[in-house]
Length: 299
Ligand code: NAD
Image 1: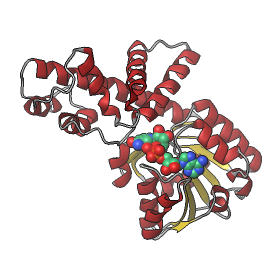
Image 2: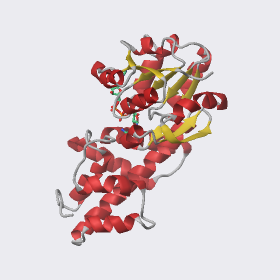
Image 3: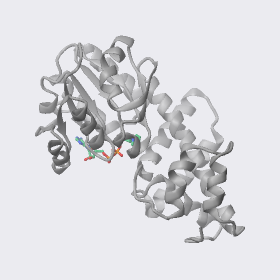
Image 4: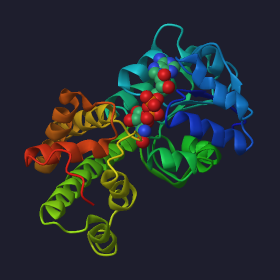
């Protein structure tokens, strides 16, 4: 079965451009968001708006959720007036939010009981990757469900990989968030270090990007960090949530992640200081404070 009608629930920073890309790829997209005005852009792009998540799901070949956190996905899919009740047997539920792997596995079990094929398919690549349909999509679930979802996922991402059974996609995403937080922290430390030595940081970043220190974080985040532009992007609140998933999952597996635990603590501190709505690259502010160099801006 190939999906033609897609219900898209959660039209935020990521969901809105993803839904628009599905319209562009020729799918019939029915959107729902808790803040109703967020469906306007989808309608302008040629999609449709539904008055509730359950009504969006009615008759859809596939339902995609792109919501903030595990409780949001649980309440939309399994809660009162639940989406799962409205889905027809054989259809696909693709959760693209970043949530706990154990919750992803519970959704897959609930789906199996209802005859619905469930995939966890979290993404990496940020808002830019969503807008350009170049996301990395890590998919957990049954092979046949992955094959059926492939045309939908290919319309959203450039790197789409089936990484294992239910929950495996979320485990890979947790590893992604561990790496990204650690690299942002080290890039922040390097920027403060360079500044303290009076080195031109723009030139430094250019040459660092061409060597072993080069990374997508350095390419995509360093320019806005130097410009002190911390508009999200990916909010500190969400990365804090993800590092909670990482530390809990590491503990559950009996694995020590000392750098990850430190990054989680620094992210939590940034949030506690009232910066939860800034982009996660605002870790730079935290690093500046540690050295008493708040607001130092020489580039
Ligand atoms: P966001 O907060 O911008 O968007 C979430 C949307 O869901 C909002 O529009 C909100 O109104 C809506 N929503 C919340 N509860 C709802 C409900 N019960 N019913 C319907 N709509 C509801 O978040 P985002 O940045 O788009 O992130 C979404 C998910 O993708 C998160 O799990 C995040 O961790 C993950 N993610 C984000 C990025 C990024 O760069 N922003 C990158 C990769 C993954």
